[in-house]
Length: 463
Image (cartoon, rainbow, N blue to C red; front, side):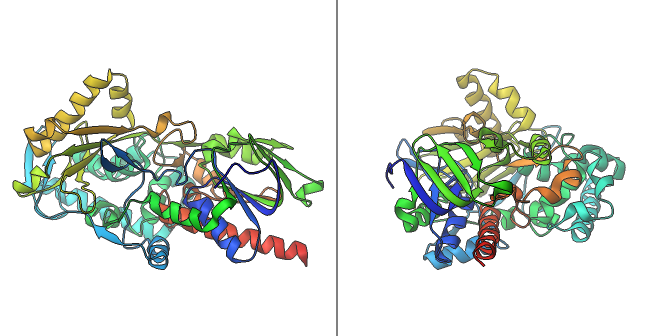
Protein backbone atom coordinates (compact mmCIF):
# COMPACT_ATOMS: atom_id res chain seq x y z
CA UNK A 1 0.00 0.00 0.00
CA UNK A 2 1.54 3.27 -1.04
CA UNK A 3 0.93 6.94 -1.71
CA UNK A 4 0.07 6.42 -5.38
CA UNK A 5 0.42 8.89 -8.24
CA UNK A 6 -2.21 11.59 -8.42
CA UNK A 7 -4.32 10.45 -11.38
CA UNK A 8 -5.68 6.90 -11.66
CA UNK A 9 -8.25 5.13 -13.80
CA UNK A 10 -10.22 2.03 -12.85
CA UNK A 11 -13.42 0.20 -13.54
CA UNK A 12 -14.62 0.76 -9.98
CA UNK A 13 -13.65 2.92 -7.01
CA UNK A 14 -14.53 1.65 -3.54
CA UNK A 15 -14.74 4.28 -0.81
CA UNK A 16 -13.88 2.70 2.55
CA UNK A 17 -11.60 -0.22 3.48
CA UNK A 18 -13.73 -1.88 6.13
CA UNK A 19 -15.04 -5.42 5.63
CA UNK A 20 -17.83 -4.21 3.29
CA UNK A 21 -15.55 -2.20 1.01
CA UNK A 22 -12.77 -4.78 0.95
CA UNK A 23 -15.17 -7.62 0.17
CA UNK A 24 -16.70 -5.52 -2.61
CA UNK A 25 -13.24 -5.02 -4.06
CA UNK A 26 -12.35 -8.70 -3.59
CA UNK A 27 -15.38 -9.93 -5.53
CA UNK A 28 -14.98 -7.35 -8.31
CA UNK A 29 -11.27 -8.08 -8.68
CA UNK A 30 -12.01 -11.81 -8.90
CA UNK A 31 -14.52 -11.03 -11.65
CA UNK A 32 -11.73 -9.38 -13.64
CA UNK A 33 -12.49 -5.72 -12.91
CA UNK A 34 -9.86 -3.11 -12.10
CA UNK A 35 -10.57 -1.68 -8.63
CA UNK A 36 -9.12 1.12 -6.50
CA UNK A 37 -9.94 1.35 -2.76
CA UNK A 38 -9.69 4.72 -0.99
CA UNK A 39 -9.68 4.74 2.82
CA UNK A 40 -9.72 7.84 5.03
CA UNK A 41 -8.03 6.18 8.00
CA UNK A 42 -4.38 5.15 8.22
CA UNK A 43 -5.48 1.51 8.57
CA UNK A 44 -7.97 -0.94 7.11
CA UNK A 45 -10.77 -2.63 9.07
CA UNK A 46 -13.33 0.14 9.62
CA UNK A 47 -15.15 -0.58 12.87
CA UNK A 48 -12.96 -3.63 13.51
CA UNK A 49 -9.68 -2.70 15.16
CA UNK A 50 -7.29 -4.91 17.11
CA UNK A 51 -4.69 -2.84 18.94
CA UNK A 52 -2.09 -3.37 21.63
CA UNK A 53 -2.26 -1.29 24.81
CA UNK A 54 0.52 -1.75 27.36
CA UNK A 55 1.49 -4.98 25.64
CA UNK A 56 -2.02 -6.44 25.68
CA UNK A 57 -3.96 -6.99 22.42
CA UNK A 58 -7.47 -5.55 22.69
CA UNK A 59 -10.44 -5.82 20.33
CA UNK A 60 -11.39 -2.15 20.12
CA UNK A 61 -14.25 -2.80 17.69
CA UNK A 62 -16.43 -5.66 16.45
CA UNK A 63 -15.15 -9.10 17.43
CA UNK A 64 -17.73 -11.88 17.91
CA UNK A 65 -19.06 -14.51 15.50
CA UNK A 66 -22.34 -16.37 15.91
CA UNK A 67 -23.10 -19.74 14.22
CA UNK A 68 -25.54 -18.16 11.73
CA UNK A 69 -22.87 -15.81 10.31
CA UNK A 70 -22.07 -18.12 7.45
CA UNK A 71 -20.63 -15.46 5.15
CA UNK A 72 -17.93 -14.60 7.70
CA UNK A 73 -17.36 -18.23 8.72
CA UNK A 74 -17.00 -19.22 5.06
CA UNK A 75 -14.47 -16.46 4.43
CA UNK A 76 -12.44 -17.45 7.50
CA UNK A 77 -12.40 -21.02 6.25
CA UNK A 78 -11.32 -19.90 2.79
CA UNK A 79 -8.53 -17.76 4.24
CA UNK A 80 -7.41 -20.57 6.55
CA UNK A 81 -8.00 -18.42 9.64
CA UNK A 82 -8.78 -20.01 13.00
CA UNK A 83 -11.45 -19.18 15.57
CA UNK A 84 -11.79 -19.95 19.27
CA UNK A 85 -14.71 -20.08 21.68
CA UNK A 86 -15.40 -17.35 24.20
CA UNK A 87 -14.81 -18.56 27.77
CA UNK A 88 -18.16 -19.31 29.39
CA UNK A 89 -17.58 -22.01 32.05
CA UNK A 90 -19.11 -21.41 35.47
CA UNK A 91 -21.81 -19.16 36.89
CA UNK A 92 -23.14 -15.95 35.41
CA UNK A 93 -24.11 -13.03 37.67
CA UNK A 94 -27.36 -11.05 37.59
CA UNK A 95 -27.93 -7.80 39.44
CA UNK A 96 -31.62 -6.98 39.96
CA UNK A 97 -33.07 -3.46 39.92
CA UNK A 98 -33.05 -3.49 43.75
CA UNK A 99 -29.33 -4.35 43.75
CA UNK A 100 -29.69 -8.04 44.62
CA UNK A 101 -26.74 -10.03 43.22
CA UNK A 102 -27.46 -13.61 42.17
CA UNK A 103 -25.27 -16.30 40.65
CA UNK A 104 -27.05 -18.48 38.12
CA UNK A 105 -26.60 -20.99 35.29
CA UNK A 106 -28.35 -21.18 31.94
CA UNK A 107 -29.91 -18.43 29.85
CA UNK A 108 -32.81 -17.54 32.16
CA UNK A 109 -32.31 -14.58 34.48
CA UNK A 110 -33.01 -15.27 38.20
CA UNK A 111 -36.19 -13.19 38.51
CA UNK A 112 -39.57 -13.72 40.14
CA UNK A 113 -41.65 -16.49 38.54
CA UNK A 114 -44.25 -14.02 37.31
CA UNK A 115 -41.54 -11.89 35.64
CA UNK A 116 -39.88 -14.98 34.17
CA UNK A 117 -43.21 -15.98 32.61
CA UNK A 118 -43.64 -12.49 31.14
CA UNK A 119 -40.11 -12.51 29.75
CA UNK A 120 -40.86 -15.89 28.15
CA UNK A 121 -44.19 -14.63 26.74
CA UNK A 122 -42.64 -11.43 25.35
CA UNK A 123 -39.80 -13.46 23.83
CA UNK A 124 -42.31 -15.69 22.05
CA UNK A 125 -44.22 -12.63 20.88
CA UNK A 126 -41.01 -11.15 19.45
CA UNK A 127 -40.04 -14.46 17.84
CA UNK A 128 -43.46 -14.65 16.16
CA UNK A 129 -43.08 -11.09 14.84
CA UNK A 130 -39.56 -11.80 13.61
CA UNK A 131 -40.72 -14.92 11.76
CA UNK A 132 -43.53 -12.93 10.14
CA UNK A 133 -41.60 -9.75 9.26
CA UNK A 134 -38.15 -11.14 8.39
CA UNK A 135 -34.87 -9.32 7.78
CA UNK A 136 -35.01 -8.80 4.02
CA UNK A 137 -37.90 -6.37 3.56
CA UNK A 138 -39.42 -5.42 6.93
CA UNK A 139 -40.87 -2.27 5.35
CA UNK A 140 -43.04 -4.40 3.04
CA UNK A 141 -44.89 -6.17 5.87
CA UNK A 142 -48.61 -5.29 6.21
CA UNK A 143 -47.97 -4.09 9.80
CA UNK A 144 -44.77 -2.18 8.95
CA UNK A 145 -46.14 1.32 9.47
CA UNK A 146 -47.96 0.34 12.66
CA UNK A 147 -44.79 -1.20 14.12
CA UNK A 148 -42.55 1.61 12.88
CA UNK A 149 -44.53 4.45 14.45
CA UNK A 150 -44.45 3.22 18.04
CA UNK A 151 -41.26 3.14 20.08
CA UNK A 152 -40.03 -0.21 21.34
CA UNK A 153 -40.36 1.13 24.89
CA UNK A 154 -44.05 1.95 24.50
CA UNK A 155 -44.90 -1.15 22.47
CA UNK A 156 -43.50 -3.41 25.20
CA UNK A 157 -45.65 -1.68 27.80
CA UNK A 158 -48.71 -2.20 25.62
CA UNK A 159 -47.95 -5.92 25.78
CA UNK A 160 -47.12 -6.22 29.49
CA UNK A 161 -47.48 -4.37 32.78
CA UNK A 162 -44.43 -6.12 34.27
CA UNK A 163 -41.83 -3.34 34.21
CA UNK A 164 -38.86 -5.61 34.91
CA UNK A 165 -39.86 -7.94 32.06
CA UNK A 166 -40.20 -5.00 29.65
CA UNK A 167 -36.84 -3.54 30.69
CA UNK A 168 -35.15 -6.92 30.35
CA UNK A 169 -36.50 -7.56 26.86
CA UNK A 170 -35.54 -4.01 25.83
CA UNK A 171 -31.95 -4.52 27.01
CA UNK A 172 -31.22 -7.16 24.36
CA UNK A 173 -32.09 -4.73 21.55
CA UNK A 174 -31.45 -1.28 23.02
CA UNK A 175 -28.36 -1.28 25.22
CA UNK A 176 -26.89 -4.45 23.74
CA UNK A 177 -27.37 -3.86 20.00
CA UNK A 178 -28.74 -0.55 18.70
CA UNK A 179 -27.10 1.29 21.65
CA UNK A 180 -29.96 3.76 21.79
CA UNK A 181 -32.61 4.08 24.51
CA UNK A 182 -35.69 1.99 23.65
CA UNK A 183 -37.87 5.10 23.35
CA UNK A 184 -35.64 6.34 20.49
CA UNK A 185 -36.29 3.61 17.91
CA UNK A 186 -39.32 1.78 16.61
CA UNK A 187 -40.61 -1.72 17.21
CA UNK A 188 -40.04 -2.45 13.51
CA UNK A 189 -36.37 -1.49 13.92
CA UNK A 190 -36.20 -3.82 16.95
CA UNK A 191 -37.75 -6.64 14.93
CA UNK A 192 -35.21 -6.11 12.11
CA UNK A 193 -32.38 -6.27 14.65
CA UNK A 194 -33.68 -9.61 15.94
CA UNK A 195 -34.51 -10.94 12.47
CA UNK A 196 -30.99 -10.19 11.29
CA UNK A 197 -29.75 -12.69 13.92
CA UNK A 198 -32.30 -15.34 12.96
CA UNK A 199 -34.62 -14.85 15.94
CA UNK A 200 -35.07 -12.78 19.08
CA UNK A 201 -34.17 -15.89 21.09
CA UNK A 202 -30.77 -15.90 19.39
CA UNK A 203 -30.16 -12.34 20.61
CA UNK A 204 -30.99 -13.30 24.19
CA UNK A 205 -28.62 -16.29 24.12
CA UNK A 206 -25.13 -14.95 24.77
CA UNK A 207 -23.66 -18.39 24.07
CA UNK A 208 -25.09 -18.08 20.53
CA UNK A 209 -24.64 -14.41 19.67
CA UNK A 210 -21.20 -14.17 21.32
CA UNK A 211 -19.98 -17.62 20.33
CA UNK A 212 -16.52 -17.36 18.79
CA UNK A 213 -13.66 -14.97 18.06
CA UNK A 214 -10.92 -14.84 15.43
CA UNK A 215 -7.42 -15.89 16.45
CA UNK A 216 -5.39 -12.72 15.96
CA UNK A 217 -8.42 -10.44 16.19
CA UNK A 218 -11.24 -9.49 13.82
CA UNK A 219 -9.28 -6.71 12.12
CA UNK A 220 -6.90 -9.35 10.79
CA UNK A 221 -9.68 -10.45 8.40
CA UNK A 222 -9.62 -7.03 6.72
CA UNK A 223 -5.84 -7.03 6.78
CA UNK A 224 -5.80 -10.33 4.89
CA UNK A 225 -8.30 -9.05 2.31
CA UNK A 226 -6.28 -5.84 1.89
CA UNK A 227 -3.02 -7.77 1.51
CA UNK A 228 -4.57 -9.72 -1.37
CA UNK A 229 -5.59 -6.44 -3.02
CA UNK A 230 -2.07 -5.03 -2.61
CA UNK A 231 -1.41 -1.55 -3.94
CA UNK A 232 -5.02 -1.14 -5.03
CA UNK A 233 -5.66 0.04 -1.44
CA UNK A 234 -4.78 3.65 -0.58
CA UNK A 235 -4.81 4.68 3.09
CA UNK A 236 -5.02 8.16 4.67
CA UNK A 237 -7.01 9.20 1.60
CA UNK A 238 -10.36 10.76 2.60
CA UNK A 239 -12.70 11.10 -0.36
CA UNK A 240 -14.00 14.66 -0.69
CA UNK A 241 -16.04 14.73 -3.91
CA UNK A 242 -17.79 12.32 -6.26
CA UNK A 243 -18.58 13.84 -9.67
CA UNK A 244 -20.97 12.07 -12.00
CA UNK A 245 -20.12 12.42 -15.68
CA UNK A 246 -22.62 12.66 -18.52
CA UNK A 247 -26.41 12.65 -18.37
CA UNK A 248 -27.64 10.37 -15.60
CA UNK A 249 -24.11 9.22 -14.83
CA UNK A 250 -23.86 6.99 -17.86
CA UNK A 251 -20.25 8.00 -18.50
CA UNK A 252 -18.90 7.22 -15.06
CA UNK A 253 -17.47 9.17 -12.14
CA UNK A 254 -14.48 11.14 -10.99
CA UNK A 255 -13.67 10.48 -7.33
CA UNK A 256 -11.47 13.14 -5.72
CA UNK A 257 -9.57 12.58 -2.49
CA UNK A 258 -6.80 14.54 -0.78
CA UNK A 259 -4.06 12.57 -2.56
CA UNK A 260 -5.61 10.58 -5.39
CA UNK A 261 -8.09 11.35 -8.15
CA UNK A 262 -9.66 8.33 -9.80
CA UNK A 263 -11.72 8.24 -12.97
CA UNK A 264 -13.93 5.15 -13.04
CA UNK A 265 -17.11 3.70 -14.47
CA UNK A 266 -18.71 3.03 -11.06
CA UNK A 267 -18.18 3.88 -7.40
CA UNK A 268 -19.24 1.96 -4.27
CA UNK A 269 -19.55 4.07 -1.12
CA UNK A 270 -18.83 1.59 1.68
CA UNK A 271 -18.92 3.71 4.83
CA UNK A 272 -21.57 4.13 7.57
CA UNK A 273 -24.62 6.11 6.37
CA UNK A 274 -23.97 9.08 8.72
CA UNK A 275 -20.71 9.59 6.80
CA UNK A 276 -22.34 9.65 3.35
CA UNK A 277 -22.81 13.40 3.71
CA UNK A 278 -19.10 13.94 4.45
CA UNK A 279 -18.68 13.57 0.70
CA UNK A 280 -19.78 16.28 -1.74
CA UNK A 281 -21.73 15.01 -4.73
CA UNK A 282 -21.76 16.83 -8.06
CA UNK A 283 -24.53 16.98 -9.08
CA UNK A 284 -26.10 16.65 -5.63
CA UNK A 285 -27.80 13.42 -4.60
CA UNK A 286 -31.57 13.28 -5.22
CA UNK A 287 -33.85 14.59 -2.48
CA UNK A 288 -34.79 11.05 -1.49
CA UNK A 289 -31.21 10.29 -0.43
CA UNK A 290 -30.77 13.68 1.24
CA UNK A 291 -33.85 13.05 3.35
CA UNK A 292 -33.17 9.37 4.05
CA UNK A 293 -29.61 9.92 5.24
CA UNK A 294 -30.81 12.47 7.79
CA UNK A 295 -33.06 9.85 9.43
CA UNK A 296 -30.22 7.37 10.04
CA UNK A 297 -28.02 7.92 13.09
CA UNK A 298 -25.36 6.06 15.04
CA UNK A 299 -25.84 4.69 18.54
CA UNK A 300 -23.48 5.33 21.45
CA UNK A 301 -21.63 2.79 23.57
CA UNK A 302 -18.43 2.73 25.60
CA UNK A 303 -16.67 -0.60 25.25
CA UNK A 304 -14.45 -0.90 28.32
CA UNK A 305 -11.45 -3.24 28.44
CA UNK A 306 -9.96 -4.19 31.82
CA UNK A 307 -6.94 -6.49 31.93
CA UNK A 308 -5.77 -8.34 35.07
CA UNK A 309 -2.72 -10.52 35.92
CA UNK A 310 -4.99 -13.59 35.79
CA UNK A 311 -8.67 -14.28 35.01
CA UNK A 312 -9.39 -14.22 38.77
CA UNK A 313 -13.15 -14.68 38.36
CA UNK A 314 -12.61 -18.22 37.08
CA UNK A 315 -11.06 -19.19 40.45
CA UNK A 316 -14.40 -18.25 42.00
CA UNK A 317 -16.32 -20.46 39.58
CA UNK A 318 -17.58 -17.48 37.56
CA UNK A 319 -17.73 -17.31 33.78
CA UNK A 320 -17.12 -13.55 33.75
CA UNK A 321 -20.60 -12.95 32.33
CA UNK A 322 -22.84 -10.44 34.10
CA UNK A 323 -26.13 -8.69 33.31
CA UNK A 324 -28.01 -5.86 34.96
CA UNK A 325 -30.83 -3.82 33.47
CA UNK A 326 -30.39 -0.98 36.00
CA UNK A 327 -26.61 -1.04 36.52
CA UNK A 328 -24.15 1.37 34.88
CA UNK A 329 -22.43 -1.57 33.16
CA UNK A 330 -25.31 -3.61 31.76
CA UNK A 331 -23.15 -6.39 30.29
CA UNK A 332 -19.73 -7.78 31.18
CA UNK A 333 -17.93 -10.79 29.64
CA UNK A 334 -14.65 -12.68 29.83
CA UNK A 335 -12.76 -11.33 26.81
CA UNK A 336 -9.38 -12.97 27.35
CA UNK A 337 -7.34 -13.03 24.16
CA UNK A 338 -6.44 -16.40 22.63
CA UNK A 339 -3.37 -17.89 24.33
CA UNK A 340 -3.01 -15.05 26.86
CA UNK A 341 -2.32 -15.98 30.50
CA UNK A 342 -3.78 -12.68 31.68
CA UNK A 343 -7.50 -12.13 32.15
CA UNK A 344 -9.40 -9.53 30.15
CA UNK A 345 -12.93 -8.35 30.84
CA UNK A 346 -15.04 -6.36 28.42
CA UNK A 347 -17.91 -4.24 29.73
CA UNK A 348 -20.46 -2.04 27.98
CA UNK A 349 -21.99 1.31 28.97
CA UNK A 350 -24.71 2.32 26.52
CA UNK A 351 -26.68 5.34 25.29
CA UNK A 352 -27.87 7.69 28.07
CA UNK A 353 -25.65 6.02 30.68
CA UNK A 354 -22.70 6.70 28.37
CA UNK A 355 -23.79 10.34 28.09
CA UNK A 356 -23.73 10.62 31.88
CA UNK A 357 -20.26 9.16 32.44
CA UNK A 358 -18.72 10.95 29.45
CA UNK A 359 -19.64 14.16 31.27
CA UNK A 360 -17.33 13.13 34.15
CA UNK A 361 -13.54 13.56 34.43
CA UNK A 362 -11.75 10.47 33.07
CA UNK A 363 -10.57 9.19 36.47
CA UNK A 364 -14.03 9.49 38.00
CA UNK A 365 -15.58 7.72 34.99
CA UNK A 366 -13.01 4.91 35.31
CA UNK A 367 -13.74 4.54 39.04
CA UNK A 368 -17.49 4.30 38.46
CA UNK A 369 -17.18 1.81 35.64
CA UNK A 370 -14.80 -0.42 37.59
CA UNK A 371 -17.07 -0.24 40.64
CA UNK A 372 -19.94 -1.42 38.44
CA UNK A 373 -17.85 -4.34 37.13
CA UNK A 374 -16.76 -5.18 40.69
CA UNK A 375 -20.41 -5.43 41.76
CA UNK A 376 -20.66 -8.40 39.38
CA UNK A 377 -17.27 -10.06 39.80
CA UNK A 378 -15.75 -8.92 43.09
CA UNK A 379 -13.35 -6.35 44.53
CA UNK A 380 -10.36 -7.57 42.52
CA UNK A 381 -12.00 -6.01 39.47
CA UNK A 382 -11.24 -2.55 40.92
CA UNK A 383 -7.51 -2.72 40.10
CA UNK A 384 -6.77 -3.75 36.51
CA UNK A 385 -3.27 -3.55 35.06
CA UNK A 386 -4.69 -2.05 31.87
CA UNK A 387 -7.89 0.00 31.46
CA UNK A 388 -9.02 1.22 28.04
CA UNK A 389 -12.24 2.75 26.72
CA UNK A 390 -13.25 2.36 23.07
CA UNK A 391 -14.82 5.68 22.15
CA UNK A 392 -15.96 5.36 18.54
CA UNK A 393 -18.21 8.41 18.82
CA UNK A 394 -15.11 10.64 18.99
CA UNK A 395 -13.62 9.19 15.80
CA UNK A 396 -14.08 11.46 12.81
CA UNK A 397 -14.62 8.56 10.41
CA UNK A 398 -17.15 6.68 12.55
CA UNK A 399 -18.98 9.02 14.96
CA UNK A 400 -20.77 6.37 17.01
CA UNK A 401 -21.25 2.65 17.62
CA UNK A 402 -22.13 0.08 16.76
CA UNK A 403 -24.03 1.13 13.68
CA UNK A 404 -26.72 3.37 12.23
CA UNK A 405 -30.44 2.79 12.69
CA UNK A 406 -33.54 4.74 11.72
CA UNK A 407 -35.57 7.07 13.88
CA UNK A 408 -39.30 6.45 14.38
CA UNK A 409 -41.02 5.87 11.05
CA UNK A 410 -37.78 5.92 9.07
CA UNK A 411 -37.48 2.23 8.29
CA UNK A 412 -40.98 1.91 6.81
CA UNK A 413 -40.59 5.19 4.94
CA UNK A 414 -37.09 4.83 3.50
CA UNK A 415 -35.95 1.23 4.03
CA UNK A 416 -36.65 0.05 0.49
CA UNK A 417 -34.38 2.77 -0.96
CA UNK A 418 -31.31 2.26 1.23
CA UNK A 419 -29.34 0.36 -1.40
CA UNK A 420 -30.83 1.99 -4.51
CA UNK A 421 -27.95 3.21 -6.73
CA UNK A 422 -27.81 6.84 -7.82
CA UNK A 423 -26.61 6.51 -11.40
CA UNK A 424 -23.11 5.01 -11.08
CA UNK A 425 -23.04 5.40 -7.26
CA UNK A 426 -23.69 2.23 -5.23
CA UNK A 427 -23.84 1.70 -1.45
CA UNK A 428 -22.46 -1.07 0.78
CA UNK A 429 -22.32 -1.26 4.56
CA UNK A 430 -23.20 -3.53 7.49
CA UNK A 431 -25.75 -0.86 8.44
CA UNK A 432 -27.66 -1.63 5.22
CA UNK A 433 -27.55 -5.42 5.57
CA UNK A 434 -30.44 -7.80 6.22
CA UNK A 435 -28.90 -10.94 7.72
CA UNK A 436 -25.90 -9.90 9.79
CA UNK A 437 -27.14 -6.30 10.16
CA UNK A 438 -24.59 -4.30 12.21
CA UNK A 439 -22.09 -7.18 12.14
CA UNK A 440 -19.01 -8.06 10.10
CA UNK A 441 -21.05 -10.84 8.52
CA UNK A 442 -23.56 -8.28 7.26
CA UNK A 443 -20.76 -6.06 5.98
CA UNK A 444 -19.37 -8.96 3.95
CA UNK A 445 -22.83 -9.82 2.59
CA UNK A 446 -23.43 -6.18 1.68
CA UNK A 447 -20.09 -6.00 -0.11
CA UNK A 448 -20.76 -9.21 -2.02
CA UNK A 449 -24.21 -7.93 -3.10
CA UNK A 450 -22.84 -4.52 -4.14
CA UNK A 451 -20.13 -6.22 -6.19
CA UNK A 452 -22.77 -8.33 -7.96
CA UNK A 453 -24.85 -5.21 -8.70
CA UNK A 454 -21.84 -3.33 -10.05
CA UNK A 455 -20.59 -6.27 -12.11
CA UNK A 456 -24.04 -6.62 -13.64
CA UNK A 457 -24.19 -2.92 -14.47
CA UNK A 458 -20.73 -3.00 -16.06
CA UNK A 459 -21.66 -6.03 -18.14
CA UNK A 460 -24.89 -4.40 -19.34
CA UNK A 461 -23.06 -1.18 -20.22
CA UNK A 462 -20.44 -3.10 -22.20
CA UNK A 463 -23.12 -5.10 -24.02
